[in-house]
Length: 292
Image (tube, helix red, strand yellow):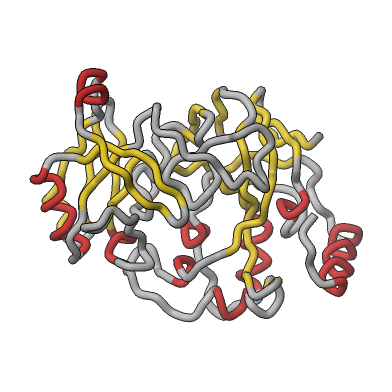
């Protein structure tokens, strides 16, 4: 359980005791972000794999020395929209919808024979495959900085923080864990505290559930969705990306300013639960989160 101030927990449990809180937790949104820090795709169902939902953050933009690029460096990435097709991603910028690029899925031969390079994502270094120059130039033009698009093949291993791993779990190009879980009630509570409500896409969750109390995800540990076993291991410390409007690319002070008044612990704003996937399977909207 999160080490929040005592006053927070008093309010939290009083709320749960005195409000008509629905008991069932129902999966209401599934979201993937194929290219790290670019636009998300809403799905009705998804395969849960060892390193995350299928296609989630398997691609990433890197700078000239191989470091990851996110909306922290280029807010224009918020305006990159992605469509998932049978054998490729289709990507475009919201300001130029007709100027699209196809990012083909790599076949077995390409995965085996393409040159690899080491890329850096925070404190981690792992191998990735670089896409051709014409694709890299297109992305560089759209986000206004030199970049290359890379893909994480199956044999590129990036482990989660061993302090929170249960059995050497791995992840993709996520910030650190396979899944980010968030309760709709938590966003509703936050929006009641602000003059201008914000959509849930500011927090870029993978899974959203309805039912339960605000911030109930804080103390969700072992649970299943259908037959997929998952484990909550660490609350998500938020950077400044939630301040970026995902429809305009413009950053303001909210929701960080409001969250800092009641979700600040050890100088970190906590919102959402990082989750490990214990076994593969398929999940779909409407499934129940069963807590063990």
